[in-house]
Amino acid sequence: MQAKVSAAGRGGGREEGFSLIELLVVILIIGILAAIAIPSFVGQKSKATDAQAKELARTSQTTAEAIATEHDGSYEKVTVEELKNEEPTIPTAVSTTEAYLSGTTHGASEYSVTVTSADGDEYTISRASDGTVTRECTSATGRHACEGKETSTW
Image (tube, rainbow, N blue to C red):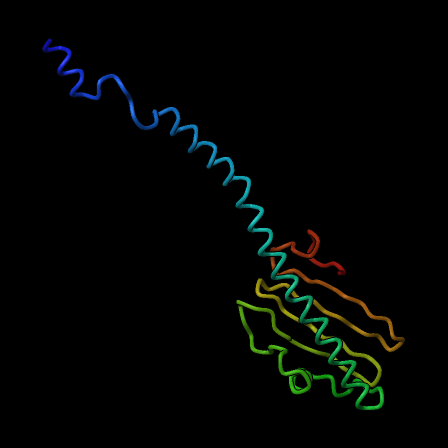
């Protein structure tokens, strides 16, 4: 009779909770899912940074064309300051958290605008005197973010 009472006092043969093996299997599954998901999220952040810089370069290009329209087709006034005056949403202050307009070149019938992304890549849109527009990406030192190369077009 004594044996029955002490067995009943310890739970009566009924077990509650998870075994160690079940817990280890769950932790293993979570680890595998994290190993798959984390690199995907890191790549998405880089893509978003590049997209922000490309969008700013395109906005700067549109603004440069607007300036030329106001000045009889001349791109002489396409400077960082003039672009900022024409379109106040263009950031020009150096930043490591967002893209900014880092430079321009200009002539009577040609110009280029260069945007630096938060990770240091530079995106340039150039208009040649014959009207040809080119887009170029230059990766920051030691990186290959421009389609896996140090420089590329986009």
